[in-house]
Image (cartoon, rainbow, N blue to C red):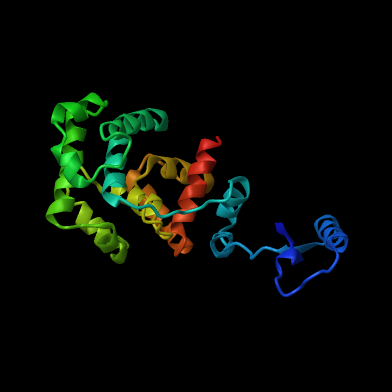
Length: 243
């Protein structure tokens, strides 16, 4: 990919022209003819090179769109959103989350605001009784342990999993999704995710009838993907969705 850079010499205060026609002609020539092409810095492709060593996964990488990982703020809210989306389609989960934000005039609420919201109001956005309790559990835990974004970003993946799974309603899978999609961690493998299981079963011809044996094989295969297992998961999800 390339970008075109046009130098505007008229902005150089050290150069003065006595004749306006000369200046005008020079600017026009620069705009029309003086376009210099420079290659943009190459994107980080280390994960692609590493994952491509697995020949079977390499085929998945070729078929999938490039995967990107981003970091987000307000980790408490993202964890609540992850709970809200459990066992729901993406479309339904989005509707519920938008209704949830409308309780706070479209703004992202603080943990205290979530706790201060009446139970019935939270139920009114489409959450089950259990999910309302779980969301409130998250807000209560975050406040009690003074867990802010800065503190969580400093913790390792295992430390975060060990800490947040103490919250009733928050399982390992939920925290793994948080690590991937909120904290932007590159080396997370969601062995319990049904989509990952189905994709790997298809790609690596794994028998899904024996869950224990299946997971052991998945973990053995995925160990070779470290330290970029999150990217592998993203590609496997897209591979599954593509049919």
